[in-house]
Length: 198
Length: 173
Image 1 (cartoon, rainbow over the protein chains, first blue to last red):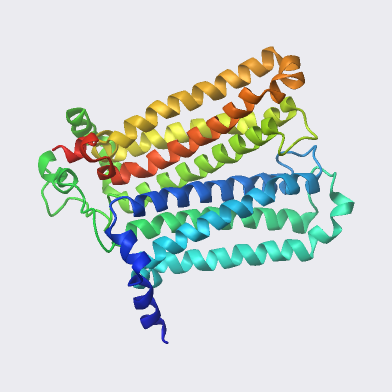
Image 2: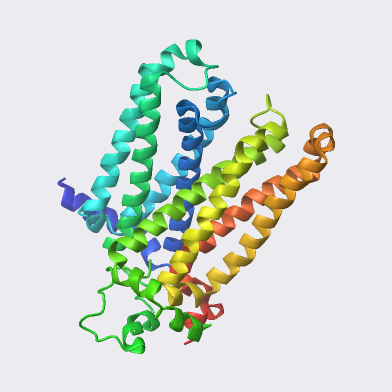
C-alpha cells in the first residue's frame, strides 16, 4: 500500500469520520493535547533545569528523575494518542504540511538527544548525582532538549495556522467582516492565516 | 463589549499585531503555551508533594520554595502574553463565553496560589506536621490541579466558542 492510499484510508476510517462530524470531538481532543504537552514540557523543564544547575540544585538527580519522568511519560502517551486522533481527521493535509514534518523531525531529534544522555552522562550519575549541575555533556543535552521542545511547541502551533480542517467551523462572520467594519480597504488589509480562528 | 473590542482593534498596538499576524500571533501563543507548561509542571509537583506521591524527601516548604517562584513568574508571563493576545485579536477573544469563563477560573486559581503560599509561610509547622496529611487538603490539591486543567480547556475553546451553543455571544449575532 503506498502512502497516499494509507492516508486516504486513515481519514476515511469510521473513527476519523466520527471526529470530523462531531461539533465537540476535535476541540476537546485538541484541548487534551494541550494539557498533555504542557505537562510533558513542564516536567522535562524540571529535569533540564536541574541538569543545567538552574533549579532543584540541592536535590539528588536520581530522586528528581524518579519523581518526575513517570509523569512525563504518562503525559506523553496522552499527547501522542490525541495527536494521532487529530492527524487521522485530515491525514493527507497534515502529512504534506511542512510544519507537521518539521515537528515530527524535531520530536525524533529530542528522542535521539535523550538517548545520548541515557548512554553517556546518565551512566556515570553516581559521580555527579549530588552536584549542583551535570557534567558538560549533560548540560549540553539539557540545553538542546529545552530548545528542541520549545521548537516542537512552536511548529505544533504553526500547524494549526497552516492547515484547514476538513469540516466545520468557518470563521465567524464577525471576523470575516472585521476589516470592512473598521473601514480598512479590502485589498490592503492583512490577509489572515488560513485558519485564523484557531 | 463588542464595541470595546472593535475600538481596541483600531488602536495602533492592535493594528501592528494584526498587520504582522503571520508571526506575531503564533509567537505570542507559543510563549503563552510555554508559560502554561511551567504552571502545570509547578502545580503538579506541589500537589504531588501534598498527596505524598513525590518530593517526599523534601518538606512541603522546600518543595514550595523550589516551585513557587517559577509558578508566580509563569503567571506574570501568561498575563503579559494574554494581554497581547487580547490586544491583537480583541473580537476573537473578548466576544466569547470561553474567555470570560476562563478569566473567572484564572482568578480563583491565582487566589488559591497566593493564599496557599501565604498560609504556608504563616503556619509552616502546622502545614508540615498535620495539614499536609489532612484528607480535605489532599482533595483540595487534586481540585486545584483540575482547576488548571479546566483553564487550559477553556483557553483552547476560545477558538471553538461555538461548542457552547447559545451561551456563546459570537453565536448569537
